[in-house]
Length: 119
Image (cartoon, rainbow, N blue to C red; front, side, top):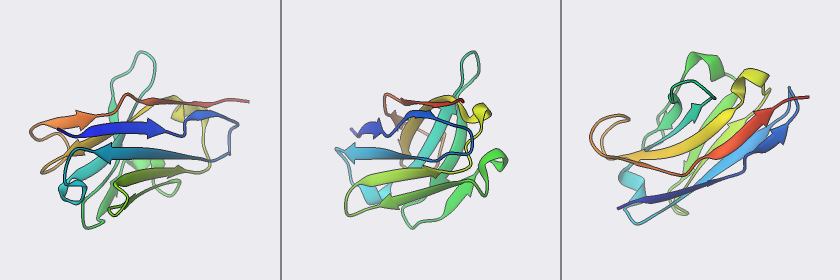
């Protein structure tokens, strides 16, 4: 059983930056594919970015060039650096862990952290 705890959300002005963190425990962290998702009010939860244990990354088109996902396997941490934030980025951001790939089999989820982009 993997436990995930997100932190780092908050209120930021358009064009600003935030760094989300996700602390993992309860498993062999380095073997999991880690991902960040977001869910805006009234919308479905969407994948934002993912990273394999070896560091291969993927991003949804809307955040390419603005967001960076990274991980520190020694610290059991995954991060999402978000730059040039837009109001459309406002959502609850969730961290997830997957044994093989995102969406396949059992996934573990954090409780989410709110990101609000507004002036």
